[in-house]
Length: 243
Image (tube, rainbow, N blue to C red; front, side):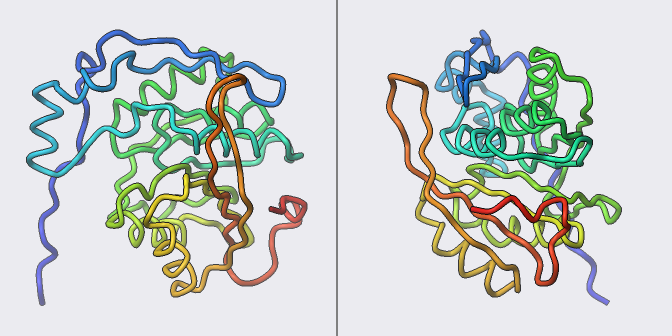
């Protein structure tokens, strides 16, 4: 029998590395959401602990930026009708904007990320917007808990590196409850072609639509929304969510 290779511990960005936190007012579908984030991302990257994580595990805290794809996903969620109390799980939640939009739609949310500091800030952002019906969980994409499933998965801007595609698709396949759907947004990054190929190879069905998002009066970015399901009937509660 071959022993499973040992895995490095999951990264954790020191809280003090975040420096000053800036509070953004994010305007989406006539609503304003408050998101706290590191004021200077470049300074965060210069912190010795972040440099060490990059050298040891090729890890960067991408989660500390508010990416356009997160706005795209949050915007789409707010335009849909959702059954009250539906459980949504956000993969790689970072600052938590899509999960917070899901909370605003009446869903229960589990924020997940590999970096526990991201979870701490996502939880603070959820509470900053007046929400409490959420949980957080550190999630290792390589070894997701067997018992963790959700009818709705949320993911935004997680394929900025090609190496993330296969683990992400495998994770979606594992976490998505029967009849559930995954909504994933991407800023049309280079690995997107590989994402589509890997979804098809895994037997997951998907449809797409173009999305745009940005603060009023500022640059609007183009991206793609993926609606991903297992083969078979979709949960009737989710049948109206089309792209």
